[in-house]
Length: 461
Image (cartoon, rainbow, N blue to C red; front, side, top):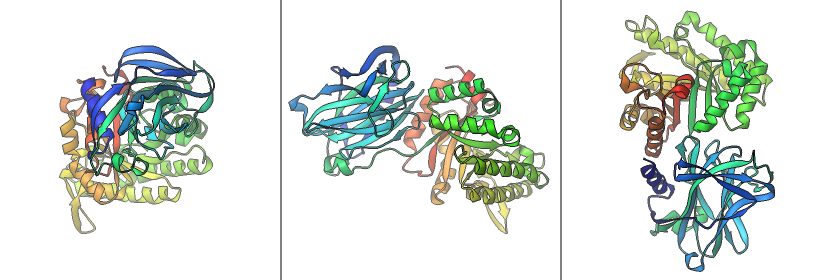
């Protein structure tokens, strides 16, 4: 599985107009203020190492390039994982100057990038990312893989027990060029093959907000799994403890994890109960106004209307009340710049609802009423996840809206809706495959999310 995964990632790094034809491992790296120790043999590229920064200045490992290799188009790449320092860089030395491109191992994003490079980053799973730069190798005398102080800066005072990363399988690949290849044409103007995406987690308890020990456990879990957005059950903190909520958001934001305040009860769909959730939203808005340095990124509603007793016989009536609630919620959140996210079952696309005299598929109405949908695409195979989300992704793309695909880890029947039986390693591999297949046919796709924290952390590997 690891070998297959690696080949997929390598071929995805470059435009389809270029083809990688040879990958040479970097076996002669010289250390500059980095201690490198074997950490294990089961990394995404096989053996992996713990790189620990010490002393002051730049911290990297360097491989000199032979004269006969200083031509053509190349790709420098490696697997990295944050174990204390979130920023790394890849670099090329030309005419005595090191050109660096930076990568964020918490968010999976490209940071500041050299005009000489086309950088890319791909999530692998388990906290690992494959990072790369494509470049024109003419006159490049050495390549550099380093630990950065922060985005754009290679210089800092290293502490070996704190400032460290894992690294596996660094290599340089040759690229067979075609005339329309962006690398061949001009690497300085090539667009990075990276897109913004979310790796979310439903957290159905407020304990991590209210308890520092539980907060640390959740933070560690999310960092280890490469997750970057927490959908946190916020009812109790919003009503009773803004101080702990602000501490929670600041802590998570400092490690690159966004926080969405989630509220969820099926009965809130009924008009007689709208005041309860709207009061929570108002409290969240007030919190956001008072804590501009610890703001959530969204209000997240999990109101599963199909669970109320009236749904089977009065679907239109129930669905219209949900849409009325979402319209009011969105008008309030927009005032303070908070996005409205709505959870939606994948099978809501099978229902048509009459609203204001027009009949339309329910999934379209929910997508229209929100800024983003977390689609509960509870399936346990790559193809079913993609196929069952097709209508939602296609419509959201047409409306310039966003969709996150959610998967299930709870041990509930039927087996085909959950990864409980397959285990976390299989789920993470499937999600990585889905993640690599969807764009550009579905620009609405914004990543995936896992339901939920308690079952995910206890599921078998």
